[in-house]
Amino acid sequence: MSWGSWENFLAMGGYAFYVWGSYLVTLGLILAEVVLLAMRKRTALGRLRARGTTGQGER
Amino acid sequence: MLAALRCVIHRDLLLAARRMSDVLTVLLFFVIVVSLFPLGIGPDPALLRTIAPGVVWVAALLASMLALNRMFASDHADGTLEQMLLGATPLGMTVAAKVFAHWLISGLPLVLISPVLALQFDLPQELIGVLAISLALGTPVLSLIGAIGAALTLGLRGGGALLSLLVLPLYVPVLIIGAGAAEAAASGLGGQAQILLLGGLLVFAAVFAPWAAAVALRISVE
Amino acid sequence: MSINWFKYSSPQTFFPLAEKLALWFGALALVACGVGLYIGFFVAPTDAQQGEAYRIIFIHVPAAWMSMFLYLVMAFWAGLGLAFNTRLSGMMASAIAPTGALFTFVALWTGSLWGKPTWGTWWVWDARLTSELILLFLYFGFMALQAAIDDARRADKAGAVLALVGVVNIPIIYFSVKWWNTLHQGASVSLAKAPTMAATMFTGMIVMALGFWFYSIAAALMRARCIMLERERSSDWAVEYVKRSA
Image (cartoon, each protein chain N blue to C red):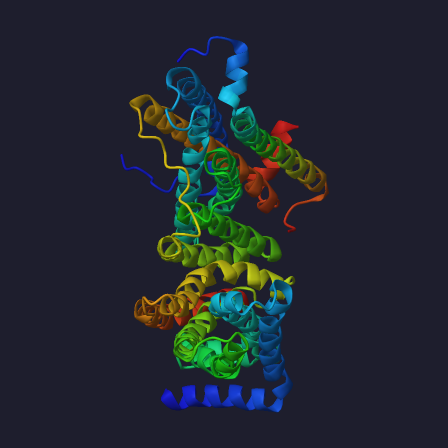
């Protein structure tokens, strides 16, 4: 499958909005999930650190 | 055991009789919602005749969902529920009895008043019959499935809305088949297939839902 | 020498394993998606009827497959946790749910964007799209229920009951929606049929599906680690881990 030119590839035969709209939103959501997970891990670790120094055995 | 179940049903009916307003509010909600649709869509008789089964069914869905909270909440509050959990009667049977009582209080009235509402939409007579039968078979299924949701959300904040979110997706097949019965009858195909399917759903739900609700109750109470 | 099948069934032992697995599967996902996208854009030819718009299929179909598969896996772990009262199984189920919801949304979003150029409307009440929508509600219901319950064990068990009831209902929902769709033939149209599959198109779809699968595993494992850290706060291994990572 040869697109001929970069412009052709981006234009997607006129369907650029739909094709790139799909791919970019998917990529965006996946990136958001990864970032949110990283933030969640950091928060959990932070809480653990704060509690660890005061004592264990509490919920 | 039958005596215990009869006792559970009798108690629920008695409690409902003492708080008639609860029962009537659900019924009135049903009537009002059905009346809202023509107001929102327009009085064109042909259009109303087409949407009538769907509208009545959606309203019945929403009305029976309103009443679900009450199924276990008051018993949970005064400790009766824990007695039921500890009792000799299998919890599944007790739940089935409670669901039956719940249907008598909030499902059956909807079935009985549906012909009157169908007349508002100028639905032909045979279709009114099909609609009423579909509701008669479908509303118990709604109560049975709803019991599972009510048991899961017992005592939780977010109560009613959370319960709706859990239960409405599970209601979808009942809605499609139930409303489809009258619609199929309207288009000449006859609603027998849907009615039979509803009967099948009812049997399936009657066997499994009380058991699932019982499991959910144990999880929620302990 | 006997195998301890349950070695990794405690959070303490599973926690470090989950990290290793997540990194491996994440890498595999990148590779698979890279290959899949290459096939999708540079190997698969233009479709005769739908032009380039059909290339959405390389995300839409794998995402839809994942959405359903993940629900089954979630229900499996939830059921296991309910039956054997294992903490980790419940955590795994909770970890999978958001990723499953994500792919369900992606399937709906891409389905909508695929439908517009090919059928002229942003939404069609096609049997599969409608069932996907209801699946999204099932995922949200599961997540909402767990969020509303403070006690982790009750949340796990309640979610498990809901997930299992949902699993039983999914075929019923799908078939009733399919039936409803065929009965109302005039009013609705079926979503753009996948182009008669050239081998390259099919391969691209399968590879992307693999990529999504690996990604789901990685994401779920990372989330499970977060859940373990949040819930097992007072346990020794968690405190040790925090000390070591400080």
